[in-house]
Length: 96
Image 1: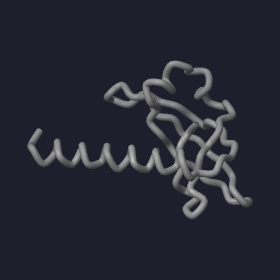
Image 2: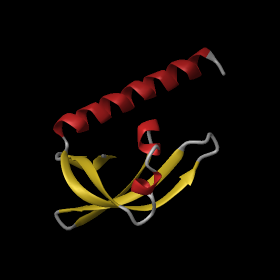
Image 3: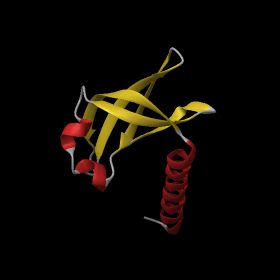
């Protein structure tokens, strides 16, 4: 792993945390449903979910945080879940 790879990963992590912080403060809330979950090669839990805003269906995925992984039933396929989305970009969303 080179120096550039470390810098790029750190930059991506910062961008993701900024995006999550923005949505936590300014995002609107809607209901969604977990479609599927899987464990990645690195051991992270990845969930796929969908939600509907103004009659338009959106589908997204997210890697669960350590806190979210403590309650696996909340993120099981078929579970209803709260979604925060950007009112100016409905495709930008996070799980609550």
